Image (cartoon, rainbow, N blue to C red; front, side):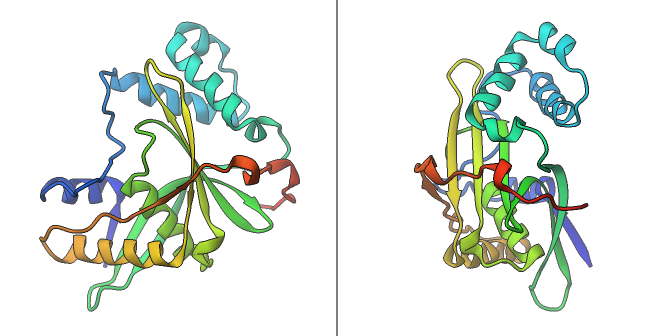
Length: 216
């Protein structure tokens, strides 16, 4: 049995030729890696209800990113409803004789029992293969029809305003991503990029206040 994380997949991908049109989560900007790491840590503390104001006062750039996240997805900060942060998801990948599993870390809430993924990072506003793998994994893990899934991405930038994108999933993208993973892990060939469609209609974004409480 083999277990691959996104970091493992990134290393394998890096050993091959770049995939045309593919974006990655690696920062395209001149940025202190500690700022990105501290931002993710502060976001976790914020959702856990821990005091963060001293950190915000000491790091103005991180404070701006947190403010942008709060403004773009205010429903996540209105309390009472559950949001899982960095939850591990493991999905089996059918490749033949050797059992392979993909593990991802996802942020998600539930709407009528259906996960809705959220990502916030210093990244490009374009969809990434990491986004595709996370949506694929959660569809497999929960055995959910892909058409019911979507991901809300918040693309932060050291200078420019943050951008919000909505990635809507479907069976074609699910199958394409699975085939891409199989080929990535079993063959050393150039692969087509898993395509993720962007929907800019935010009128149907998740409102966590309408989500029933779900016990852990």
